[in-house]
Length: 126
Image 1: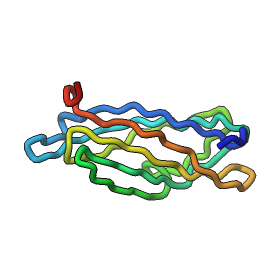
Image 2: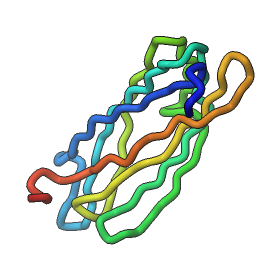
Image 3: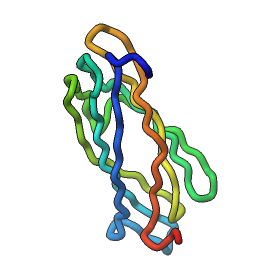
Image 4: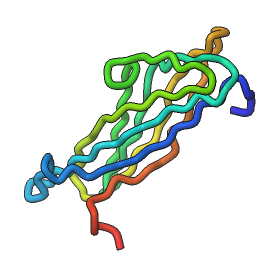
């Protein structure tokens, strides 16, 4: 969004969870830590999320829900909110992307884009 009042940026760090995975059963667990940075001029509440999860075979799953990990954080201008969550895939490699639906203090709703990021078992990609 080009309006500087509503500028929320999202960054992601991923980790493969070998201890929660069962490769012999096509179960690959991943954690992701997300930082939602409010670079806008107004405080904004994270209302809901929409994930698009694509596995290595091209199967797509849409996940929608309120907030993140049971919270709907209010993020003040210049502040951030960080949380960790996870997903399980049936392939060694996949991607996630999506958006957060935000509500600014002035009542305007807007989306914060979550750019595509990769989930991969170490050594699965060359």
